[in-house]
Image (cartoon, rainbow, N blue to C red; front, side):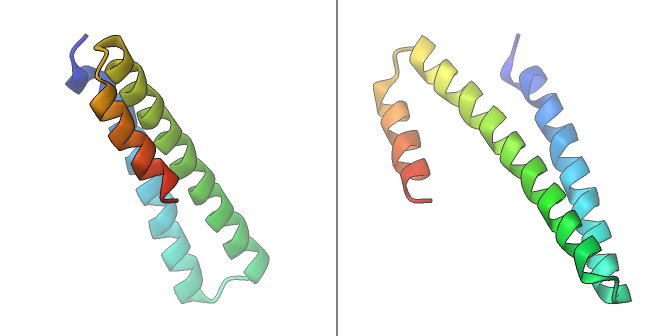
Length: 82
């Protein structure tokens, strides 16, 4: 399976997150209640975190399967900055 096919589900997830963010902006502009806004923030953040984990997991597995220690080190440095 090529990389493009493997990432189709990531694109779908990101589009859903984008929809959540758009809804969040509309809620804020409309002055919706704070608890609803916070709930939407949490949902969008969780969806983005889950997508990040998926991408990270796939990239690390790919690097490890190719025994690409340099790329693994780069990934570790990137996630360590968070």
